[in-house]
Image (cartoon, rainbow, N blue to C red; front, top):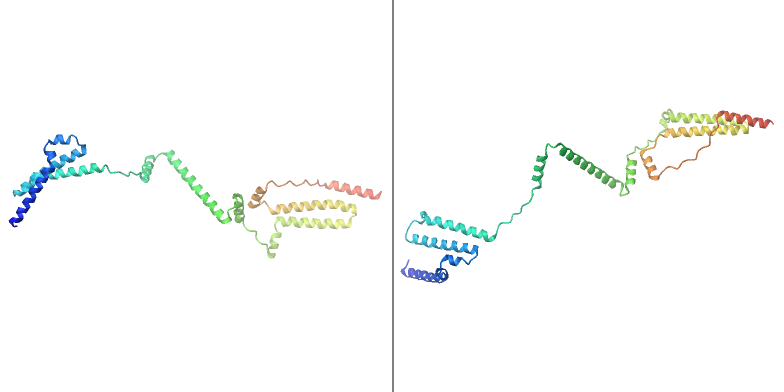
Length: 279
């Protein structure tokens, strides 16, 4: 390095020192404690730390210029300690970090469940709630499926359609199966009633008009018996018919039939008619 360069560097350092003395004049003319007494707490800490760091830096530069091994000197540890205070002052200026505390619902549920395990009353109540929720979900699913399948009608009409769809279809009776159906109790009763009706017709053809009227009464009784046997053949109503009857309201009452005459009364009427004809 040339001597001219060294001279220029020394001149620059001398000018920097003069500028530093001018800047530090307010602090050097009075004691440090009196200068910091009017400052806020954070600014006071900054001033103390900067003054300490400046002294340590000047000492470090002096030792290095004299050729000392500064790496093993205690001043290095002091400089590192002062630098840690810079970080603390920076954290104090930025304020405490905001914590986004959130509740882990799954973890809380596990803790509560573990704490309440072994409680028979709680276990039974939880089981009842689970059963009720399952039944409610199943019912809603069935209603949704029924509304999607049978249209968005009222609830009773949808149920009627569903019951009608669930009923088994009536089988078609073929001619080959007629002989099998004749062996049923209903077909026997109809056959017997028809035979009785033919017998009454033959008697009416042979008897007089008065006897014909009396026999007509017997024919009405036979027809009523045949109708009653037919009703027994059909059996009870299906679920759909019962539901439709509930929707349509109460069934109107039929008029009471006239009381059928007994056989003795029929014979007495026949004898009275014959006696009247003979007079």
